Length: 69
Image (cartoon, rainbow, N blue to C red; front, side):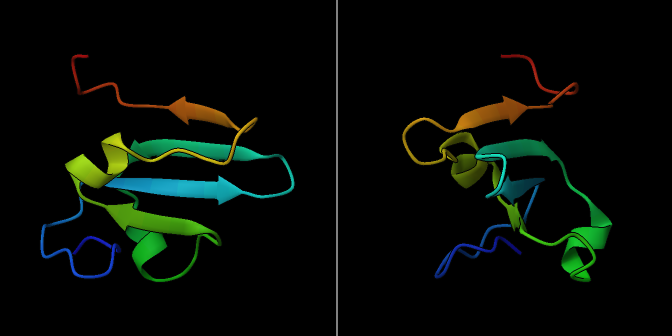
């Protein structure tokens, strides 16, 4: 399920936040993130992952080879 509070959609992608590098990475769903093996990662549904952004000045990287944009 999506990590956003109140959202009942299935998670489709994993968003990982690296505070030290000021980097937010959106990529394919990672099963390890659900088990807590990837620190700073959250599983999100498509709409929430599409809107994922970091604070001003952060770099956002999107790895979505299966999705046409």
